[in-house]
Length: 178
Image (cartoon, rainbow, N blue to C red; front, top):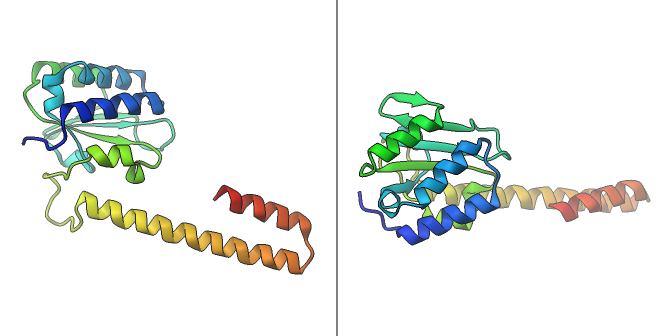
């Protein structure tokens, strides 16, 4: 599978990601830095969603999400050992490696979406492609945010009508944080 995302774009993304987020496990940062240091390996790196369906995959999480910190999938074997993943990548550097990064706002992050590829290994029973899913999720987030803001505005109006300044200030603060 030849990637339409260039090695330079992938390396730039990983450098940005490593600077912007704190990973749950330090070994994951070492592993990602190793990938960035080798253009040959980066040729075979593909960022995807649902990486657990891929023949060889890394799932890496940041401290701001509840996902498992690290997981390495190879065929039907799963390991939480980052060293095992490192050695497999080093010894099989010609094989594609699929990476799923779990971090706050990943589905709407323009840096991640720019390097994200469709996962060719997702079974047919999954109707939506990665891009369709991201668009649907972005739409849902927008609708939810708009609804929340509208509800807060109505509650602010009610607090003003009732001359409840404490509630007004609390709700206004909440609205500004949305």
